[in-house]
Length: 247
Image (cartoon, rainbow, N blue to C red; front, side):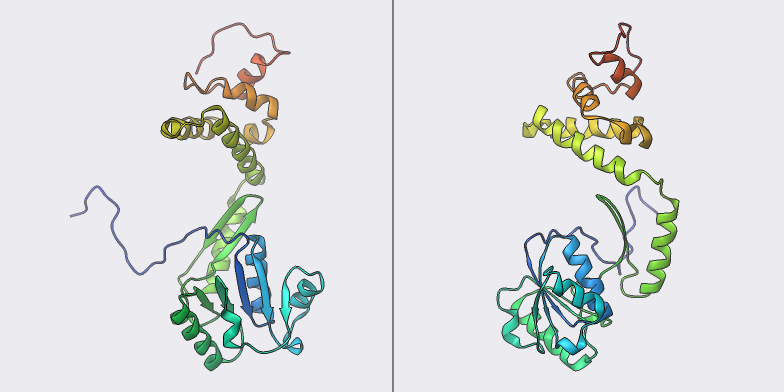
């Protein structure tokens, strides 16, 4: 008999947004797969070093190196390359070498992803849709990367065109609210009030919200009410609304 709580399915991965800003990421390999990995970690503001013989670089990786977006070591991997590294991503056409790198990472407790070898991965890369601050990842837990890409594209096609901009404006409002109510005990109230804003305002409203609108809207935080964007603008200095608000 099913209970009131989520049923445990098992066999999944813990999907996290891993913060690797300024972390040292080592990419072993310079082909197409390595190029995709490099984009992923550069987008997360990591410090990236690529190790590969120059002859094995594809055009995109060579471009990253030329633009000094990554550091480059022109040779094959050596065990000492793991010193001081926070994460390792391998993408080489040598299963034996890849397994050896994974074993070394395991010994040093460095999280590693070995391309196309799911059993030797501490984490997987999913198929990601990016729109400004919005990121949506689809993972098949190593079962079907191509299928993950298809599912991701279908999800992206169903999203409103302006959702990324709306998320960005909400982030600005949230940071402003923390300044208005910085106390730790205000946490639950801040979350509840921001939830009301996101639920009651349309994506178009959130996108159109100006800095002045935000300052006016924040004046409604203490009583815990959420007026419409129209009502907010009628309250601003050039407005002339004197009547009651229907919240």
